[in-house]
Length: 514
RNA sequence: GCGGGAGUAGCUCAGCUGGUAGAGCAUUAGCCUUCCAAGCUAAAUGUCGCGAGUUCGAACCUCGUCUCCCGCUCCA
Image (tube, rainbow, N blue to C red; front, side, top):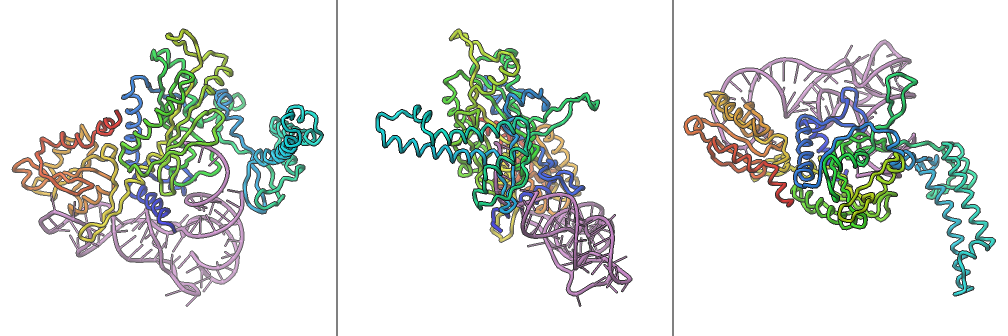
């Protein structure tokens, strides 16, 4: 086993043991690719979300928040392209055990005829030189016409089959064309099956009177359909952004790798509306802003890299990912897309409503272009754990397992420990905790030796341990121990709120961004 | 969906050629009173994934089934 796989296994195990993430429905043997956030996990997740929200909504005057419903009008997904573009027909080869998209196989087959046409054209160019007229050649050359007819025929049949949802016809087409597995040459195919990306459910409690709606596969559309409402009620002027966090649902063909790829996941998206023509400028700005935000967390600059998309989605004119070095290697953590006016235009068309902005300076109306930043909160959570999980050997040769979670994100900020559980130390410790709990998530622990208690807090990433001893009763001073360095300092109880507050404040992170 | 691996205590696992379960860690209670884990005593915890078959007898053998994990096509 690779050590990297090992790390993921350790993180999964640690997450369950110490209360960060449990398998969903654990007592029923779990549910594939679904996980529950445990007591410490939910704190970390909330903190990550708060960091994102603050960086977007609090720090930018021209970004406002939104929390749109998970249920949306079914036409939304017609407009977004999810209904059509993400119903991929799939086919398996029985011999090679490989799975292919039927439409891709057919497309690639048609492509072969196009290649033949190109060859004929190239030959003709050589023969006729400058006098060559491609349009005329394509319209008259018998070879080209024959091949073009084949291409058209294939496309027509495919389109006709898909329009009728006739998957049997798609299989017949593959068989008629004699398409073989590109890798093995086998023509032993299974039936074509539909892959549905979106989860369906029913709106309306009376059977027969209900209509099918979908659980949203992305949060972005909730922003787009509210574009005009938000712009008007918030009196926003372009350029401005709308931020939203929330659950989204996708029936992945394969969903795995712990919380990296789940069927139910949480996105944090910000759609930034800009004047057409300025979108690539803003795209670059947001790329920069987002990588800065990531690096401010201090998980290690070397763990990040950009991956620019060469093949763009139908709605984008520029796109990249910010990848993180997960235990499985560099994988997408956040996507930044220049989505053009595709979505707003599509919603205009399907809703019949104008989704335009009147620019008071230019005195003209236009459909804004959109630059999207979209990050998976669960992936961010996994990235944080990946970087934080450290097994270190101490000077005395003993081992220590510590989660070096950025202080501002730690689920528990401070734990108060009486050195021994008598002589009034527990009472004093509780007093301190009662003082701190209004500002920080705190714990109290009196069980086991002091060293063991320190290690327990290390394992959940608590940055500060405050120890009450006999002297405390005399001088109101305590020992404060820092998680990463294990150094101890003697400080006054009255200074604790200030000392801890300075170190665990989210401001420390946010100030790095401006 | 296909291929591979695995299901025994909260965790990691042992359990021989079939004789109805054990260890370490963790947990809880008590002792000890200590500023960096692993001191002492005691306790709790299992339909050995599920079902059927073979057998006097199955955690173990046979068949079926379910679930999880890894890989492939989708994606944040």
